[in-house]
Length: 336
Image 1: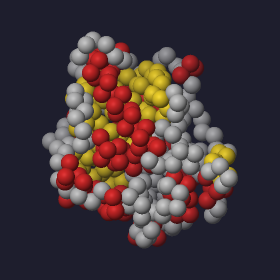
Image 2 (image 1 turned 45 degrees about the vertical axis):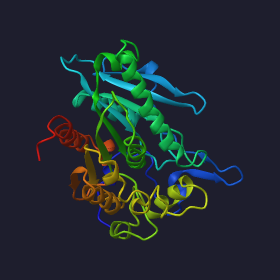
Image 3 (image 1 turned 90 degrees about the vertical axis):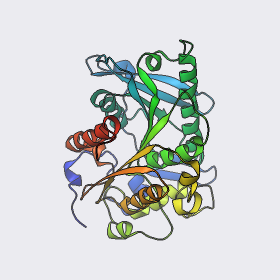
């Protein structure tokens, strides 16, 4: 396998193991369908945050029963105009990760600062304790929360940062890896309904996670990938899909559940797809992009040669390049 420079980048979860449990640092407890997670990512505690940062962040409860919450970000510099509003969904294969993880916290801070934008990062329920569609339901609830704030904004109420800074008519759903899959399904769930005064004008899928039972060319070519080995990819689907389902379930295989749905919705928005040639998941992600395009969605694909899954989270130079393309997509939508 080609070396994608993994060893030069600090990736917390990188482990040399052919055992998916050992690679993911998890123990599955079949009696109650839970995981013991031995992997602990560095977290950003807002109480200890540096006030000199170019962005501010705060947490807001979403659903106390489900223990879901939102982390809001805004740039510290003032803008004469309202800013795009981005709902962000972290990765982790549906089974790991948190909006509080430093890699996502720092990335969302850069989104807020460099685009600039108001960012709402969603802490959703993880599988297998809460198998899909739980994460989709949490995403839907977050979108409805934003709509509630927009309605209250018209009465000069609602969440202060959003009221002050967010352009509710310029809203984007963004996710990386499993988060990209969540964005896709949350959009299909919400776009058929009237969300006014919120307008979801764009989707942003970065290294989005889709699969099938049949192996893709990139999966076979990169089966022993150091970041997303095939055995680990299969394992996260087994732990996150409804019990008894395989990877041809509609949540993972888009040719099963959503064929024709974009055309039926008739959504006039746009989709930015960021992909890496060195990512085992790339073929399935690009298949989804082509399907959406055939069904009338305006799709912009940025696919780099080489690289690895989730690269923009770990390599500052790649983060900067990603931001340039994303800023163009959001702020210059008519530029090819």
